[in-house]
Every structure is written in C-alpha cells, then in structure tokens.
Image (cartoon, rainbow, N blue to C red; front, side, top):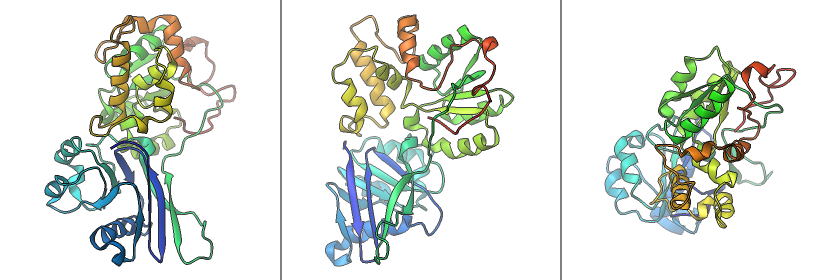
Length: 342
C-alpha cells in the first residue's frame, strides 16, 4: 500500500475524520480520550456493516486485529488499514515486527507506551482531541494532532558534542565536519542507545541527530529529558540520505516531487520505513557516477567543500562549522532558547 488515505467513521454520537500516510501510525493518550471508541466503531462496522449504526468511508478496507490468534488473522489481511487497540501485547514483540514487514497493510496502533521494535516516524504519533467544530451539535468531532510539536530556534544551534544515531556514512560525515571545528561527534550505535549516550555527556551542549522516520518510540523520554536539560537539541530529518537528496547535490528531475509527497512513491511492502526508501534512492541515483553512495562507507567526495556545504545548508538553524573557540554562546547573544526544533 502507498499513498495518503482519509478515514471518516461516525455514529450518532461521535465522528472521527483523519488521514494516514505511512505504514505505521501510533495513537497515544490517556483514558477517556476516545481511542478505544474509535477501534470499537471500526470493529462494529467491519462485523455488521450498516446494521451497526456506524458509517465508515475510506478507499481501503478498515479492520481490527486482536488477541492470541493475531498471526492467523493477519495472514489473510491484504491491502487493509489495520487497527490495533491497546492491551494487545503482541505489538511489542519482535515476531509481530517481523511479520508486518512482509505485508502491504497500513497499521494504526493505539498504545500508551513506545514500541521499540517498530520503526515508526516521529511525525506519525498522534493524540485525539475534540476540535469543537460542531459546537452545540450532539456529535463530538475528534481530530488528530501531532503529539510532538516543533518550533524554530531564533539563533544558530552550535553544540559542543554531536551524537548521531547512525554509525555508518552519516556518522562519518558529521564526524569529519565536527573534527574541523573542534567538536566531538559520537555514534550511539542505534536509536535505543541515544538516551544513555546523552546522559553520559550532560555537562556539554548536545545536538542529537537521528532518523525521524524511525525515532517515534524514543520521543517521550527524550522530551522529558530535554525539559530538564535545556542544552540538548534534536535534529530529526527523515534520514541522512534524505538530507543528501534534499540538498540537491544529486541531479534527479523527479526528486522534488518524491520529497514533497513521498507517500505517493513508497510502497509499504517494499520499504518498512521511509529511511530505507531514501537510502535506496541515493544508491540508485549515484550508482554510475562519482557520487556513488554506500551506506557503510562514506564516499570521500561528499566531504568536498562545495558538496558538504550544500548538505549542511539543509540543516537550517544548526551551525557545525564555526570553531568552538570563536563562539560566544550556544543560542545567540542573550543565550535565549525559543523551543524544541526539528
């Protein structure tokens, strides 16, 4: 499955209207926010159709997965939007993660906890709220909102330490950049190790660079840590390869459209996360030229100044090139921080 899909589900009391565009969407929130009501309505419509009193409009079949027989149920689901309510512990298992990689479904998972085994995007973690659009009408209209909001910094972020999720080409690129300006660049060797790596360097001004396409499960504890330690900043592009594509160093007439609407190009069965798609695009687009890209070992041509400057220019609000001994403050002349950024 690929593309953006709108789902409208309603009965006499309540209405939901939202869109999903990736293979994994996570809905979080406390009790009484309408999460389980949504799944119940999907289930009722699937089992009883119009007799359920639930209206459902979507260009894809919507169904519910639950219980110990989940694997058998999933084996017959094709090209569906699959809803999973909280309390189904199988979503935390490696078995579930392995099975859904091979399917062409989209999944909407309701949970109160992060799911480390699944590579879901920071941009696809939602809560549910009453929008108030129907005022005094009896229906309660619910809309999705991004749980993790971002804002821009007014001043360039100039960290002392850079921590990358990547241990391959992305880390090699930033390590080289940081070395030139007297900064320390550390690879966390994976997203699950980033938190511990930050804790080991809390006496420093830190910039974390991670793949936003798969960092959703780590966000809650990161947000809590950043509230306590304001000298931690996050930069979450889709991936390092996305930065390269965004920079324009690779000539591709279709790339602008692919970056604006990746959901129209990424088949979920082929690419479990968008990070994998962007990596494949860079490799394919450079395979016969001097920019030939390898995930494991960075081609030295990417460190040429004209190319590296274009890549760094994508990271708006971040300056890794000013030598540390020249900088006066981290966030600007008044050391003022305006909010988290992405």
